[in-house]
Length: 310
Ligand SMILES: [Zn+2]
Image (cartoon, rainbow, N blue to C red; front, side, top):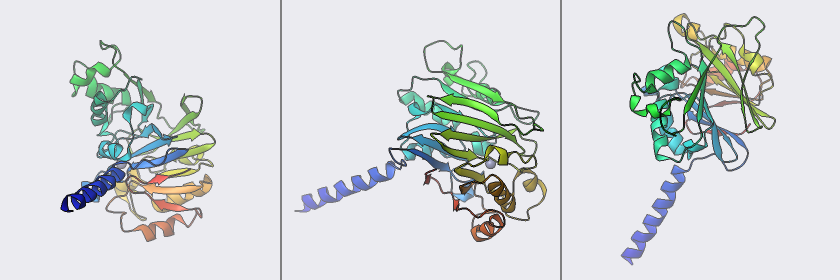
């Protein structure tokens, strides 16, 4: 009797643990999954910025890869071998630090296709995304040179990282940049955004008439995002500062009232607020109040592993 009871308990424990390990959004349709809803502080107890786009049960595009993203990637049930591309909004630590973790993890998977990595050009403060990839994986000088087999030109038939830099100069016409398309169904576009002196890009993914737009970190000084996000189904906007913040934080980030104005101007269907930090966590009611001064659509606050359907 005791053996049967123990067996019964172990069976259900396994079911529960397996359920927790499979947090994928669903096997059909398009989904946005938040891998990291936090900012650069570890005290926020969230993974840093990172998102996945799922199409019919496969994770196809990743936006940013901040610290903790790799763990959440595993928890989401995603397979790195399914991933077509990683797009970086910019290269601050809280958006990029887990890239080598993911690249190494792929060694234990059956990946064969090359991985496209796109991000902004560099400047005096930050490397370009291709410079960032070289700084980590260059077979001679990279910090993780032992993974250098994944750079183009390296010997062997291993899959390669193809990195490309996008222009980040503000364009007076605020024209969107066309990004790559995949499998005749996934279309991407981007626009430079102002994030203080840091080269930064907002991304938009369009699939089967649905779209998800990612602000990344930005102050909105250039007022470019509203063009990229026009009529988008989901705008993921970074709620890094509360209303009324000044100084460096305001020069880098947008307050809730600005997010609301962008969402309203662009006719965003659903607004998802992410990149939540200690200075905005717990402030949700006030944040909503300021967003709603301009925007009257649905507002959601992101948590790690949340799924949103566009
Ligand atoms: Zn950030």
